[in-house]
Image 1 (cartoon, rainbow, N blue to C red):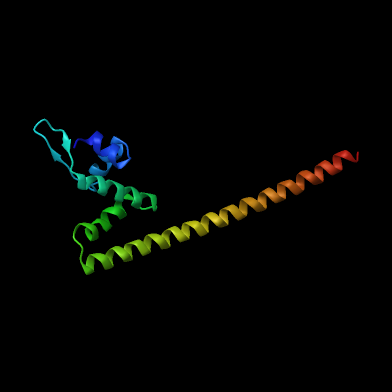
Image 2 (cartoon, one colour):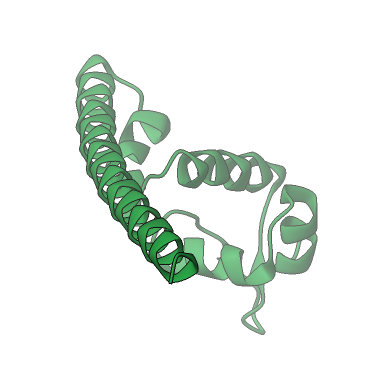
Length: 126
């Protein structure tokens, strides 16, 4: 199938398919005229890539995980699990940073509201 059909069947844009191929995450064969051709296998691969991206993984991390998918072995599986654990830990740290930032913003908002109420109360008594 050609790139447009792959994109439609996988539920992504043609641009995404090209990006996956540019990143080395997806392969195609080329016709003599240079058109990309894909098999049904690539439809599932693109859907799988979408799930990995939805989990917050970068192209680089996905590329590191693909050997486990393409050449399953105990070593590849262990490496993939370790890499996913590292990503999970990175995301957990990022979440903690975001929560801290949100809490700081909440404190600033509370102080601003208090200041506003104090000014409003002072202004209405004069």
